[in-house]
Image 1: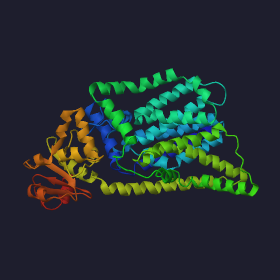
Image 2 (image 1 turned 90 degrees about the horizontal axis):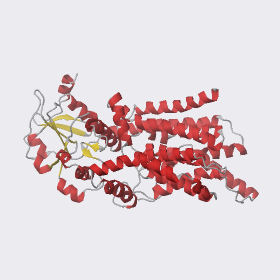
Image 3 (image 1 turned 180 degrees about the vertical axis):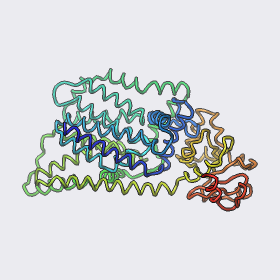
Image 4 (image 1 turned 135 degrees about the horizontal axis):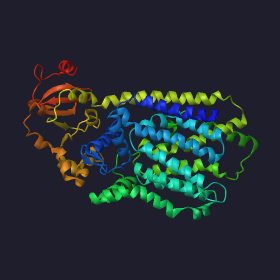
Amino acid sequence: MMKSKKIWFYILGFWVLLLALATIRPLSLPDEGRYADVGRWMLISGDWLVPRLNGIPFFHKPPLLYWMQAAVFEWAGVHVWTARWVIALHALLLLVGVYFGLKPLYKDEPFARKVLMVIGSSVGFLIGGQYINHDFMVAAWISISVILFALSLRLDDTTHRGLARLGFVACGLGFLSKGLIGLALPGAVIFVWLLLTGRQRKMLDFPWLSGFLIFAAITMPWMLLAQHQNPGFFDYFIIAQHFSRFTGSQFNSQQAWWFYVPIIALYLFPWVIIPVVDFFQKIKINLKHSQWGIEKPNPLRILPWVWLLVILVFFSVPKSKLIGYILPAIPPVAMLVVQSWNNIQKRKKYPQFWFWIFCGLSVATSLGLNFLARHNSLQNASADVADALKCHVQKQDEIYVLGEYPYDFSFAMNGQKPITVVQDWDDAKKNALDDWRRIFFEGVHFDEKSGQALLNILDFEKIQPLAQNWVVAPANYPADNLKNKWHVFYKGQKWWLWRGAAPEGADPIKPAAELLQKTCR
């Protein structure tokens, strides 16, 4: 009983620390601003089938994150912190799943407990587990499905079909989190693991039919309904957003093949030092005693290696790489860290407080990086402009955005209608890269009426500026045309707010900060 209470103390302690860190940062752009606002739009629209961004269909990712966010917003309100609850819940799910899965799998409670502590104290967990996008969600479901499948294929002769079917449930939820990798990666890990350990015949006893029926029952209703109401959805969601992104070279954030090696080291710093020390100790011993024989592989010791390498190779192949993609590698690396710690302890017994020192250093690293992320996020935020505008905007007012798209603006405003995004849309359709412009004009194909939120720059120049018209533009936006018709109302750090007619008592060529403070009290 005491040991059980202690485990829950660790689990909830790490999770509460994560929730506390989640209160410190504003939305990081573009990802957090985009995905938080899609969840908010699902609540506003009442349309639980079609995710939307600024009222425009957004089919880049499946809807589980947005469904859960909309439910949270309905219950707890629209705030940056509540927007992170869904990801934080999956972080808790990961800790619980890893501990209570590895404990019976390895029949080694101390091993499972140490893995829990490595993950819970890591940068990947404490920051990634509160970062609003789909990566941590799918990482949690991939990890749970791998553990469930491994448990169902224990070293005895029988396959536990019930656990295998639960694994397919996890794959289905992984698919609804981020798409096909929710099924493909757990399947690849288990297939390679069985192949390398000479147990491929186990696959013959796997509940394939019932498993895939469960998977289809979870994933296909949304897919079929989305295709029925939005012709062309399958091609866009599966082909363009899955296969083309994996094989194409036209997408953002192109990196070298080795990109994820230092990212994994960062996610689990300083824990990754332990496997390095273990490796060099083994080399030293082998050189000294000429022991270079190959030991018979233990399937459970091989599992984290297979898990890590399948994830690493899969995400290293595409040219486009983002740091969150590799989050599913955190659990197997944590398992390897603990294996190495145990190896080192067998050679020379180190006091247990060294493990706690690593744990403390890992938490300290997470704290430092979280505050650094806060600083960087504030540099690009438009929330200060949104706060200023909220004090004065009326329901009938029109808000125009020029130059760029401030992903956090609508969320900070909690606006109930789309803002008008001004661009040369004809040129964007010909030359736009993998950016927000493409998101919008591709989304309009599924709902032409939503295209009213997109305005060509020539049409904007014909608008007669009135007091109920507002413009949000980057601080460095070429403002020659604006100065003739519009008046600066507020200067934020990154974005400026312009108005069609200067507010009474304000200098039209300076920020109206004093007036804002007076009227916003």
